[in-house]
Amino acid sequence: MLILGLTGSIGMGKSTTAKLFAEAGVPVYDADAAVHKIYEGEAAPAIEAAFPGTTVDGKVDRNRLSARVVHDPAAIKQLEQIVHPMLRASRQQFLEEAERSGAGVAVVDVPLLFETGGERHVDAVVVVTTSPELQRERILARDNMTGVKLAAILTRQLPDAEKRKRADFVVDTSNGLDPVRTQIRDILCEVVKMPRRRT
Image 1: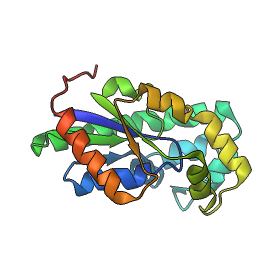
Image 2: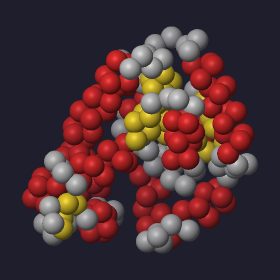
Image 3: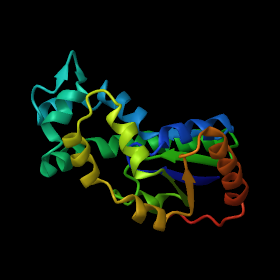
């Protein structure tokens, strides 16, 4: 089974692209959904111990946690040390199940794939992109999003141009869903001809 890493900066259309891979019959591991799940369970006690007052009823309150760590690189690093091992375990379990199901390709949707060195663990990387104007418009339309918060998020993400340079495939979401579906079909035809590359 080949593993495709799916990534892209905030607001580029990555979640939509992931849904379209799933629509094409590809198993998709959603790192954000996995984070939600562990925030509601196994990670909550450790996060409360590290950042008191960030959980409510035994679940992590994402807004409280975000307010606590977003401007503090040391706190973000501490949070990652708690969360990343749990995420690795859940991703491994997903990949084993996908392989058992006979899938030829699986997608791991990881927002910070390059930033965390995750490209070493996949066979090819798909980067989702759009114009800076459309990106900004999409992000600022979200609940609880401000220009300041957006700037803090973007400083943690590799610039889009750098991601595209390092990608095996680039999906542009600027022109609606049908062109994205076509790009996904092309990628799935190409990727099966590629050698396994992950370490």
